[in-house]
Image 1 (cartoon, rainbow, N blue to C red):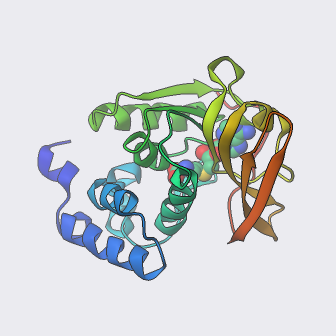
Image 2 (cartoon, rainbow, N blue to C red):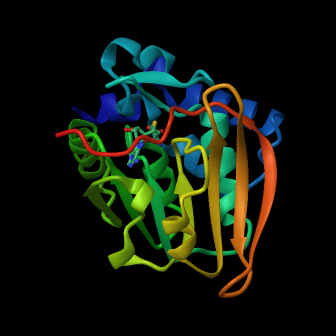
Length: 222
Ligand code: SAH
């Protein structure tokens, strides 16, 4: 990929990204840092070329294996909520997928640990990080419902696939004061939740809004 392709032209240009940022503002995204990073990150490289002209529509798009790259609004919203308590050092992401949300996070926190259960998606994401010179991301191929205990505790955890219940392993891997942003529920009725670990034993949960994510599945695919 040459520099022009990376930067984007026409439907993938900086101007098109600018329009996306305007739309995000209209929808209530206020964090300037988040808006800046989303305005500067080429989402079109996270999508198959056949669909890249749609990269800056505010919509989820297929990335293969029955999975989707998340809608820009929800990426912005979840990032903003995760960061609302102050700067984060260690963030766990469950569901690397295309790597787009990972790339946004990596520009806003010190270090991202991202887990994906589908190996080919993880490998594609890895190539994109190297293309974009993102060096503060560690990847693991495993069932992210288990978290990544060796690398915890985390002061932020973001889950981009929906379990029926919040996995207890993730709660256990939060640091005190840590924040977890997670969609919870079945295919018909999901809610985005923020869980804060207030003390060693107390967690505070806030329900934020209705959302629609692919399900968090167990096991891995080679
Ligand atoms: N943030 C990604 C979202 C991808 S969709 C993006 O914007 O591209 C959700 C991803 O979660 C899929 O890639 C899916 O394979 C992954 N996933 C689902 N269950 C998982 C699990 N238990 N562990 C790790 N990843 C999981």
